[in-house]
Length: 449
Image (tube, rainbow, N blue to C red):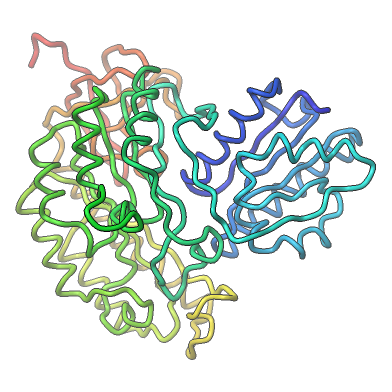
């Protein structure tokens, strides 16, 4: 049985947590982890299957690793995750070099399923409706830097956006209990975590499946404040119309909950939002953003917009551009619509050409670049707490860190040109320079403050 493992995790942080669980299970079973595929006896790819570009990335990764396997025939190649859940039978037919395909519910069963590779015949594909939900006793090997980690509070999703496959790939909403989440958070805190990022497909849906008078997101935040000493608590994936005043008050009254709101809006045209089956309109979005800015004037707001949705017109894009200029949000991601079989939107008329989608994306990205630069320039001269990540990826002569307003992996960063600190420390930094997405600053001594 293989004892050296190389794991490649694709997709979002939620997928990364699944990879960490598989790593934990393998570690407990005695497997050793290696940095390159050439060193391994077992190659494992955890895939994303949300949209076609992610599927293409997954196939490319599998083909690249299959070349390693070709050079060393004894190596076993295992593919897991959403892409398998979506295309399992087709993948098994088209990629015979893969020894084992596992769906999203096989995360914690990885060791048992690998035992089947000892048999002379290749293990069969077993897919079923997703029901898996990890807990605090689940083995997990953290792969992020030692001072930050993700806490996945739910699985699945029960929203019905017309463009999204997640409910069919991941199943309905399943929330972990508050006590279980606090236990895992405490274990992470004991290991030195300074930043805990709460993730889910829809963070604000937490607890809706648990029944009346059960815990919700606010209860979880209060418990994290009371039962851990983690200095930075960040929230990702807040559904627009379930973000309420009480949550804003919690953030405003507790410095440990970061003033960072990741709210995927997807569009602002009422007509397009209706076709997307997003149950809100432009007016309600504007009221929500106004509430955030009034209660937390310094908060960072991040969103994503989708262009090229079926039936989207130039006028809809003009409206979106005007909204972006008016709102001047800190971080905006622009994505092109991907037509996915199995989604309701795939049946809609007036599908957009790829060239049109790309042109609209480039237009809006250019608008946001100027907005982001202006937002960042307002920080010049201010002093901000910064979580130091370590040596910069751009130059080993600089340190790199993140402000409270910058989420790991998805936003810009801050380059530190003066002062010393160790990774994982939170230090005070004076911002000296601003760029479109990144900032530059100097660590200040306590007596300089």
